[in-house]
Amino acid sequence: MSTTLLDAIRVVKENERFASKSYAEAAKKISNPIGYELFCQLSEFEKYHLKQLISLEKSLQEKGNFINYDGKAFPLPPKFAIKAALDPDKKSVMMIITEALDLEKLAEKAYADLAAQVTDSQGHRMFLRLSEEEHNHYRILTEAYWTLSDLGVWKWKRV
Image (cartoon, rainbow, N blue to C red; front, side, top):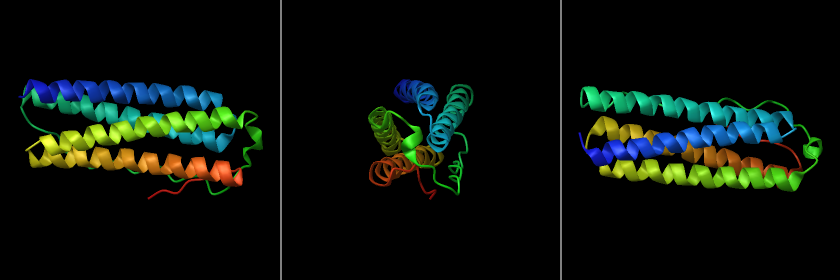
C-alpha cells in the first residue's frame, strides 16, 4: 500500500477531527436553535467521515482493500424559521459560518485530489462521494449565510 495514500488519509482524518471539534465549539456560540442544530449536525457528519476514514485506513493496512462507502445524507432542516434576533452578535455568527465555509472548501478539494490520484475504482468512488458531501455542506452553509444575512433567518435546504 502506498505510503503517500496512507499519509494523505491520515491528513484528512485530522482535518475531519478538527472540523468536527470546530463545529461543536461553534454550535456552543450560536444561541439560535436552528443555527445550533446545523452546526451540531455538521459536527456529527464530520465524526462519521472520520470513522469511515479510520475503517478505510485499517482495511488498507490489513488487507490492501478499499472499503465500500455509500455516503450519508445530511439531515433535513427544521420546517420552521426562527428570526436570527436570538443571536445578539450577528457579526460573530457570520464569521463562524465564513470559517466553516473555508473548512468545507478545503475538505472538498482534498477529497477531489485524492479521488484523482486513486486508481482503485472503489477508492475513487469513495473519495468522490466524500468530496460531494463536503460540497453539499459548503452549499448548505452558503445558503445559511445568505438567508441569515438577507432575511435574518436560519434556513437551508437538503439536496
